Length: 255
Image 1 (cartoon, helix red, strand yellow):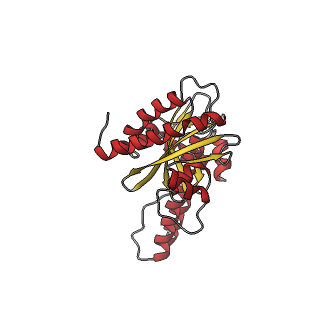
Image 2 (cartoon, one colour; image 1 turned 45 degrees about the vertical axis):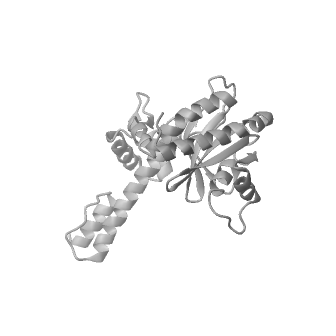
Image 3 (cartoon, one colour; image 1 turned 90 degrees about the horizontal axis):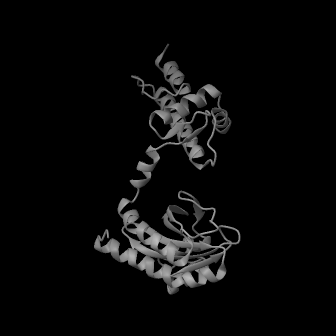
C-alpha cells in the first residue's frame, strides 16, 4: 500500500499517527481522521454527561451517525480513561474522573466562592450559581442549593445561556466598558451593581446576579427562584456576597 493510501486507510479507522511521507495529502488525511475521532469521542462524552439516564451503545451510534462497532470503540476508550462508566444494565454514565477534571477548572475561584454560595443559598432560600463568561455564553461552573428548598430550579453546572439574555449574562457583560447597542439591562446593571431578569432563561423564574473581579475572568453569582418577592429580597445579599468573594480573591483568602 502506498503512503497516501495507507494514510487514508488510517484516517478512516481513526488511527492518528502521521505517515513517514512528504505527501501533503497523506498528512492531511491522517490529521482529518484524528480530528474526526477526537470529535466523536468528545461528542459522546458530552452526550453521556448531559443525559439524565445515561446512554446505550445504540444511543451513541445514533448520535454520532456511525455503526455500533465504531460507537463501541469510541465509548470504550472513554471508559478506559474513567471518563465514562458502564453499569450492569449496559448503560454508560459519567465516570469518576470527571469530578477531578471539574475541580481543576479555576480552583481558587471555586474554593473561595462555593462556601460563600452555600451560606448565601441558606440565607435567601434559593438556588445560587457561579457563572463565568466564555465566548458569547454565560457558563455555570458551580451550584449551591438550600437544604430547605421544596422546589428546585432545573439548572446545573455546565449549562450555558446567551450572554445577552438573563441576569447572569447581563451581570457579566456589565463588567466590560459600555458598548453601542448593548442591552439596556447591561447598562443598568453597571450602574446598580446587579442585574435582574424574569423568564428569560428558565420559564417563570426570577433571577438576580452580581459580578465580581477575577483576574482574566468575568464571573458573577446568580440567584434563581420562582417567587418574585424572594428574588427582590435577595438583591442586597447577592450583591454583598459577590463583593465579599471579590475581596477574598484579591487577598488570596481561603477561609
